[in-house]
Amino acid sequence: MSNQERVRAAFSNQIEYCRSNGAPVTGRVVEAIIGAIDETTTLGGRILGWEGNPLADALPLRVAGGFHALHLAGQHSELSAIYNGDPSAARRAEQIVAQTIARDEAQLLPWLESPPQTNEAGRSSSYIAGLLWLTAAGMPSRYEILEIGSSAGLNLMIDRYHYELSGVSVGAENAALSFEPEWEGPPPPDARFAFDSIRGCDIAPVDLADPTQARRLTAYIWPEHTIRFDRMKKGIALVEQKPPQLEAANADDWMLEQLSRPQQSGVTRILVHSIVWQYIPKAGRERISQAMEEAGKRATAERPLAWLSLEANRETYRHELIARRWPDGGQPVKLGEAHAHGAWIKWLG
Image (cartoon, rainbow, N blue to C red; front, side, top):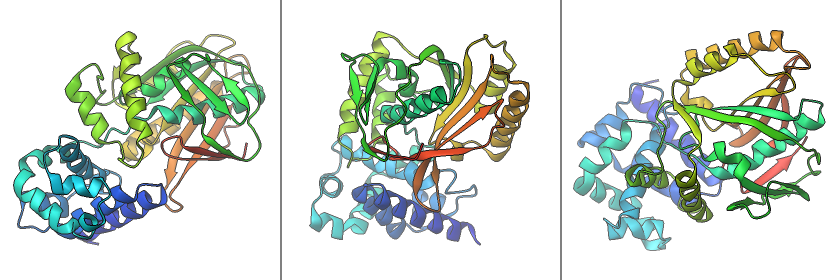
C-alpha cells in the first residue's frame, strides 16, 4: 500500500469514527479535507505524502484541529458556516476547505507538527468506575494514580470532581465540575476509596494557564460536544487555583521510573490512561507492557499493582474500559465501553 493509500484509509477510518461517536460535523470536515487536497498545495502534499503511520499519528485530527482553530478565531465565515450546521455550507464543504487552504495554509501547516491533545475531564468517570470495581474486588482502597499521556492534566484532578454513576455518588457535592454520564447496565459497586497521590506525565504537557496553549487545546474539542467547552473553562480555573502534578516525559521512561520507586504498604499502585495508547510508539508500548508484567510478578496483597485503560477499539469504533490487577494474574477484564468524552458508560463490570 502506498503512502497516499494509507493516508486515505486513515481519513476514511476517522470519518467513520467521528460519525459513530456523535461528531458528524467533524466527520464532514475531515471528509472535505481529504476530498479537497491534492499535491498542488504544500499542505496537501505533506498530508498525502505522510511517511509515518497516518492513523496512529492521528493525521486527520491534526489538520482538523487547525481548521477548527480558524473557525474559533472567526477567520473564515464560510468555514464557520459548516461548523454552525448550515446545510448549504456542508454540501459545499470541499470547495470551502480548498478556499481556506488557499488563504490560510500558513496557519494550518503547524498543526501537522504534533499529535492532537484531546484532554477531557469527562473520562474521569470511567476511571472512577474502574476504581470502584477494583476496590470491590479486594484491592487496597488507597490509590497511587500514575497517568501517562496526561496532556493538560485535567484527569489528574480526578479527586476534585463529583460523580453520579447510576446511583453511586463519589466526590464532594460542591465540586466545580460534576459528571453524570448516561448509564447502561447494572450500577457499579458502591465502594469507598481514597487517593494517596495523583501524578502524571506527557511528552508535551499543556499549560492551561497559558492562553495560547489553552486555545490550542480547545481547538481539538469536537464542536458538536458543546458541554466540553464549559468543562474546559472550569478546568482552566481549577488549574489556576492549583496545578496538577504533571511532568514532561516519555510515557515509557516515566513509567519505568515510577515502577522502580518504593511502594507504600496498603496502597494500590495503578497505571491509568485514556485515548493515548495509539500515540505512543510501538517500542514504548512494549516497554510499558513488559515493565508492568515484571512489576506484577513482584506485587503482593499489601503492595498490589493495577492497570486501567480507556482506549479505542478501531474495529468496533468503541472505547473499551479494561482493568488488570496483580498479584491476581494480570488478566485483562473488560469492565465496559464508554463515550470518548464521558457522555455515557455501558457497564459490564
